[in-house]
Image 1 (tube, rainbow, N blue to C red):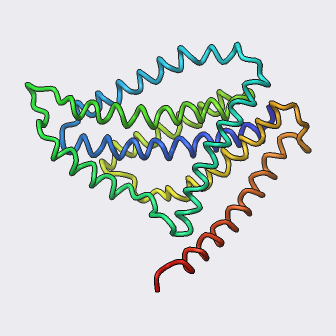
Image 2: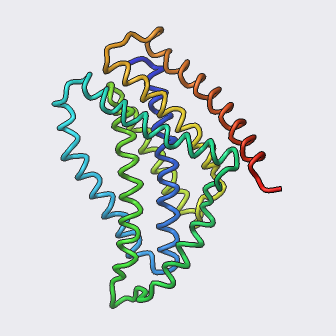
Image 3: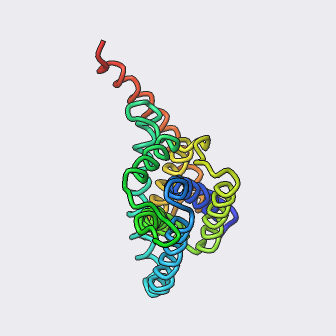
Length: 249
């Protein structure tokens, strides 16, 4: 594994995990602020333990799969996953669909938790708060786990895991310090970047799984990222132009 491949895997895993952790943090903060921090943090912790158990159970099984088969499977899945992120990021950049607003999501989740009733007291454990945080962290955590495993499929799993862990620690620290959703994080820009990188990794792993020789080997990743960036910028311009022509006058 070259330094280029390792650094690209680290950055991709870090950015992808940063986005998912920010989204999970928003829900945990909203639930904790309205229904109590104890059940909210317990729900998040229980989800983290659940995800660790899942990785411990299914992670070793991946070692029994032939590396080329594994690369082909995760390449296809990663390509589909990356294209989904990239498509939404392009449409948001073109202002065809609304941008992801953590402050708005926080307000909506806060209103939902307040209207749910049965808030936590010392004598009553708040199951609603616990389950809301467990669900949010589990859903985002599953995406993080898949992304890390897929990016690290070719031997860079440790590097990708370190990137994801750093992102999680950073978001948790900021959450404890600020007690407020990280709405100033340029999330759509991050998703744009991650979508490009995941799509590039997907194409790369499909080629590796099919035993296709990439010109320049790992340097092909940089070429793919550059081409996808150009394609995405063009797609934003086209989508923005079409949105203007179809907008009611």
